[in-house]
Image (cartoon, rainbow, N blue to C red; front, side, top):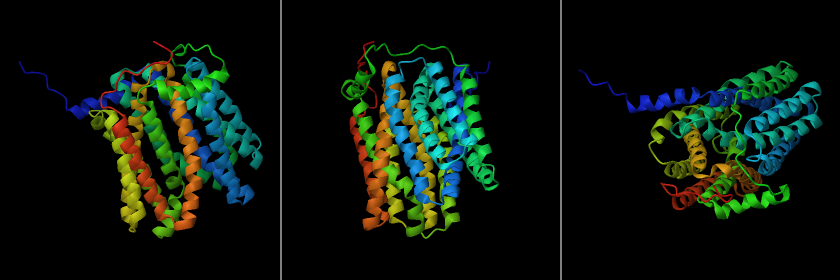
Length: 414
């Protein structure tokens, strides 16, 4: 009698993606992400083009971006009051419906003031929706499928950007900007309807303290939860790096590499393709503890940013950006999985919100400091300093995280 033929390890790991999607609750969450992120991408491109067209001002576009940034920061604070405190299904659906109404306002009355308000409110909703969604994943799939599930959610966003971004440009160019905004509103309605299929899970926190005490309680997590402090420091250092380098990549392309707009578009395409391919490495990374993968991802990107600041050949820069896309996507998925596994369930959503707050504040500070540094000494030092900050973040992670996480202390008890 012949022994059953064993499957190749990579084949077995790849099947985890199918197994994750076979979970009814996660499938609903994934489809909702697929729908709403399509609208997000359409809106992101159309809003910038629309604002520039009606105001003829780059400063006005920057103000819309600033409104979005402020919304993300305030939303992360609001998330501390509601994430973990409210059952996830009604919270996510309510946020989607509120975003649908807000997005519809821009379709009904497109104007610069409306664009400012909509950008702010949509960002506010995203900052509440995102940590609640992230903390829900471990409740919808078994632990061995967690990495695959996070990879699927990441790919849902990246893959659609390749289609939705140019489509939005075409629609706006043909005078159909209201249609784009209306489609964005419809995607939130579609997402909310899909989320009705989520299981009726209870809230995870039993805190009874008032709102004014909940924010200080969130920051107390740094002292109470094992491994959170190095994660916060890593997040802060990465935000101080990436905010500037992402915003000023177009300046590097033009000033240091002498690229025209088409060449810069090729660079962006290299990032997108790398980000799309990154999750393909997850079956291999699943064999390595995320406590090791995450610092390595920071270090690789840091070296890549320093390379961008030192090199001068456009092809070499594009290759580094392709690697950056692969590294960022696989690293982000591992980072997400690390938090979901290390942080106690009762405070996981607030932890995600705290990390989001750290990221958004650091990103805005980084953009300002990066612009100042570029003005004073040129664009190349911005990328070299950014690379050094990421390497520092990797060092913090390598020292502060353990390959086998210790049991985290739950400040609310278990």
